[in-house]
Length: 328
Image 1 (tube, one colour):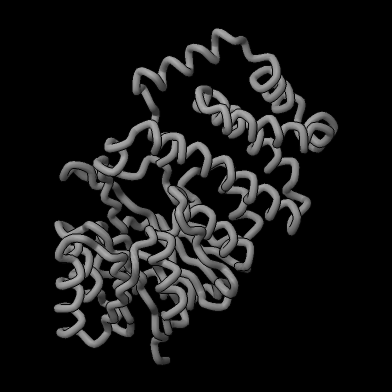
Image 2: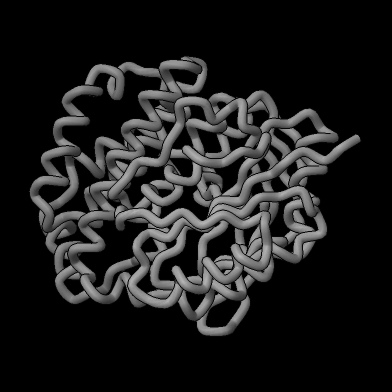
């Protein structure tokens, strides 16, 4: 049986030091029927020239140059132009194992799945660190996988996954957001029938701190705001389509509201957003299908939290003791 075309979308911006390693890992895949879309997001370094040289040497590579709009915008340019029956995303500063595509393709094709997932590792300051939240190996339906969004934060990653084209109709990345991948992934899962996970570490995610440290407070504020908007939209979309998940998703929604409120104590607009959400869901939070323990935690932290506790969390932010891992 002829192998189907698989597209790889790579947003490229400011990764001159890493893009060669990324592209080399893709052109040397054991699965050969691929197209590689390098989306130059008006990169200010030599990335555009590097991408063009690779495209001249390998006909499987296409370069798309566009005005700068961020990673979400670049990935959308790829989604509007890819030709494959399957698609995956690799960031321009990451790299993958030689069998990355082959393993993912075999998983979806042999198991009649719409999404396949592999495990990954971190690369930080030239040191490789294993993912502490193991993926596991299992085939599950989309409702079972949607539950994993509540217990495993890395479920929302899209760079360690392959997606069947059919399930992505009408789905694009939100643009101008810090966590655009999470908005995308849960929608794809909602459209999927089966998802298969494998505990093979085949993707290397490079962690870089420079973009965060340049504007700590602004970055942190944007992350809190995006996190709040993402959780709200995810809760509304998932529970509308799958009302049987309302209790579990409402409980998770409350837990995350507590964290956002605690971590964002000095940002008035974020606090006001949370107050509005509480008002909108007051009856559901009081009488809805949520266990008693979860309700008591919510009311204690949101309504009855002592002022001195809020002052303590504010002081942490002012002293730059920001826990960025909460958002990774």
